[in-house]
Each structure stands twice: as C-alpha cells, then as structure tokens.
Length: 436
Image (cartoon, rainbow, N blue to C red; front, side, top):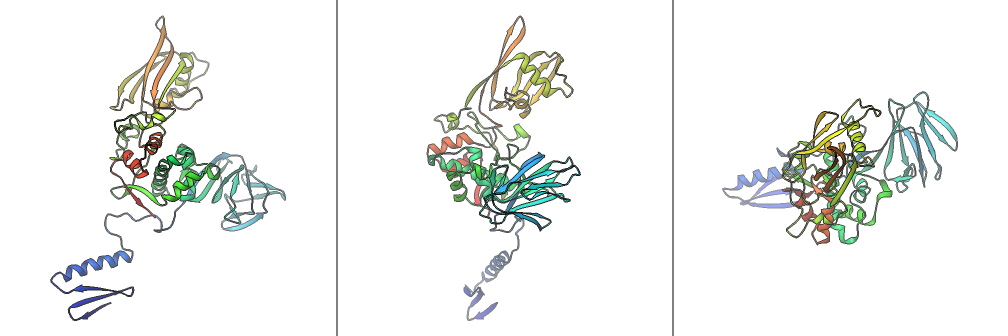
C-alpha cells in the first residue's frame, strides 16, 4: 500500500515503514522495491533454476540397498508395520524377525511368528511405529523406511527412503574412513562433496526410477546406521545444506581415494568437460598431500598365463576357458599430461586391442578381481626365450583420479587447512553455499 505524505513516499510492508526521499531517482527506487516484492512473493529471476523441492526443507532420497535377493529379514527394536498403497496390512511387535520372500506365483510371502501370509501386490512399505527406532535389514540398522519391490525375475529390491542429511551420516565414514578430530575438516569436505553429488543425481533422476542412488561404489558407499561415527555425524551436522556450485548449478562432485600426486581432468576419464574438474598437482610445493595413503605407491605382479586368462575373459565375449591363450605384448601407447595411461595396446592370441580410460583398470584386474588401482603406472615385462613370463606394473594412486583426492584431503586437514580450502583446491572455481 502506498501513501503520499509531504515529500516522502511511505511503503507499508509487514508493519515496517520504509521512507524514500522524493527526487529524480524515485522511479528507480520504486522499480528496485518492486523487484524485491516480486522476489518475496516467489517469482524467479531469469537464469536461476528453481529447486526441485521446497526451500528450507531437507529433501528425501531413495537409496537402493539390496537387489536381486530371494529372501530378506526385517526386524526392529520397536514395533513396525507393513503397508501397501498407504494402507496398513499388519503390525509386528518389537523383537520379531520377519522373513520376506517371493512365492511360486510371484507374490510376496511374509513369514513371521504368526505364520506365513501371501500378498498380491508389487510393492510393500515397511516403517517403524516409532521414528526413533531403526529398522534392520538382515540385521543392519537403517534410518528412514523401506520400500520393497518385486522384480519381473521374482527377486526383491529394497530401497531405503530417507532424508538426505541422515543418509550422509552413513556415507561420510564409509567413504573417507573413521578419522580422528584432527581430520575433521577432511570429513566436512567429504560431507559437502557427498551432499553435492547426491543432490545433483537427485535433480537428474527420472520420476519413473525406483531409486536415485545405489549404496555402493557405483554412486556412494552407504552403510546405514552401522556405518555412522561420532566425527562423521559432526561433519554432516556442521555443514548442513552446504553444497558446491559452479555458475549457479550444482557440480558433479566426483572424488576418489588417492591421486598419487596429481588429479585428472574429467574429460580424460569420462569425456565430460567441466571446468572445475581440472587436473591439478596435489601439493603446494612441499610434497604430495596424499603421500600418507597406503595406495600412494604400489606394485602388481601377474604370472603371464593368469593375466592372459583375465584379459581374455574381459576382452572376448565368447571366450572358452579351455582354449589356450597367449599374451604377446602389453605396451603403453600414449599418456595424458598427468602421466596416466591414455592408450594401452594389448596383443592377445594374435589379436590387437586398444584400451582407454577406466577400461584399462577393469581389464587388468587384480588377483582378488577388483579393478587395477589406477591408470598411473609403468609396465615391466619379464621374458625368457622371447616369451613373456610375468608382467609387473609399478603404479601410484587408487581410483579414477578426478575431483577430490580423499587421502589428499586428510593430509591437508592434518596440515591445518579448512574444509572450504580443501574443496576449493580440488574443485577449481566453485562456490560453497547453503542449498537449504
């Protein structure tokens, strides 16, 4: 409401009076105030992407915690109930263990102390009668509730529906380890990176998808309440809602265990160009921050016959285990400026293969079947009578090398750097701000 009094305009807004001197600039003041009023009313300025949830409210995410299981056990220290389409089917008292299976007709079969019950439905919801009492899946406790779905293959999926901040408490220690108070800043950096990663995935999730994230290295390792720690919870709570943005958008907050001395450009691993995913030296001139990592330097040695079989199983779709294999050559053809292998040429059974990026790590799997720690390595072969007998890789680092180096973050924290300094070291040009 506008009122004119003498040479002043009076704006009455929420019982507060704002006085404007009437002058030649009055029109500009009015335009400015009108913009403020429109913003307060919920109008969005051009160029600002609206958030997919109400500002100030912690978003809910769906995390896949079990897949392709044929039998699940649900329990809780308190009472818990089963629902379908919002209707309560039944409730179990505390201390009861309930087995969930898929019967021969493709329906849910629930076995508890009261006997066996079948339900013709594609989805069940399990929630605690008391939110302070956690649900357990196969004796592992989780916050939030469970959504259990039947697949077309008569197996079970379990999605943990949980608020983002509670989810992060089960992620931070699982990803960066349970650290001492001196490394709290590293855990806070991990919390902000993990929050940013999850929100960016949430923004781009299809509404038809059963879940937003997997509880594994495919996204972020999540271990529920069992994975929480006092320092991890403190790191999450002290950075609540904080994310990294670049030019107003959430970044792809990739991170890895150990860079080995230098991080990698994002486009060299996944062919995605993001200015903030720049390859950088992991030091300020006094030694690499991640030199404290157990994976900072490493050696892998293979017997040539075992390595040839591993390569065949990865490179050849129709490989027969009984067929003889012969590794004739394994050479680095090209490297990135960081020193990581760009192209690896393999000659196997007179066929030539050229591998790039993360395919190199999966082809050269370690004896425990995990991928090679990194592509930052040198090749040494040991031959006799012109035939390769063994292959040795001398390498550095662990992981893809893009974004934040977790061991580097720990090293920086030990040297007194703050979590914001850590994040801005690994993600160049980003802003750290409250998203909710």
